[in-house]
Image (tube, rainbow, N blue to C red):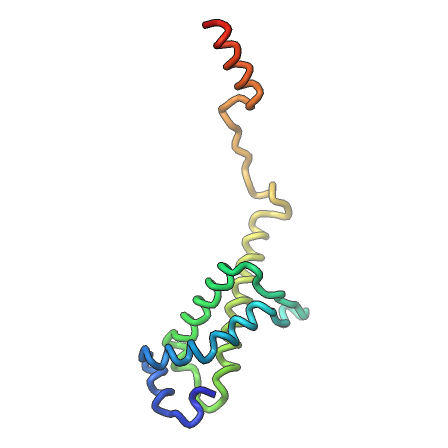
Length: 144
């Protein structure tokens, strides 16, 4: 509870002061990484779903950055009431960002179609197949 009994730090966070944002990051980054690597359950469309967590370190790092950009945004800084514990607020922002990303990915897959071939156009190559290229090269050598 980083802001419990520390009104000046809360006000500095709301103003977006660097030292307050740094303190928030250091206090909560481990918890955010834990949620993103171990996953969580959530409700969507009347179903209970599970995000299994990120296994790719680069994807994890990008998501952590995105989450703290959101936590440090003016709307998040002013949206926190200062009365309830801050950790659930940060972790809810993390969950929401992941769920939004999952929805974006699902929509992208739906736009592409059911299979990897659907929604993609096959581009015909103007070059002959490799075996034909070898045959042509051998024929050129014989003629010259």
